Length: 109
Image (cartoon, rainbow, N blue to C red; front, side, top):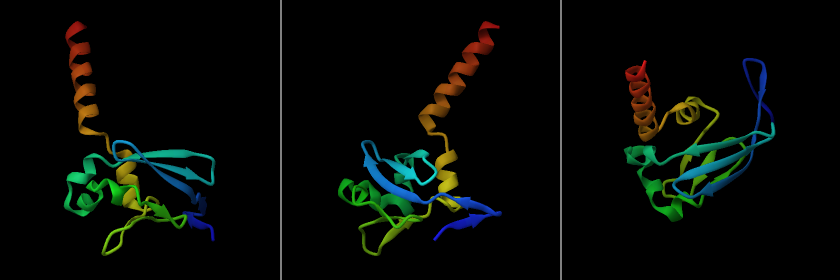
């Protein structure tokens, strides 16, 4: 069943595939692909069970939620605020590199 947000249809997740380095590839009904980098989140208590590669690789989807084979069952809803936060978060190493490049650029001007 299609879901809507502010009158717009939200694409479902067709398939989720675990990738190396704690990333997830989400294929959406819109034709878009989304790569979620979960590596930094694994240091948070909420996501700690996913450090186990077997659990991380057990990911499945019902079209709306990502579910991992843990007890109790662990899930993430990438359509909700939590998912948006995961997508928009800039990894720490990338943030440091960008800041370093900006400082270097300012020093050459």
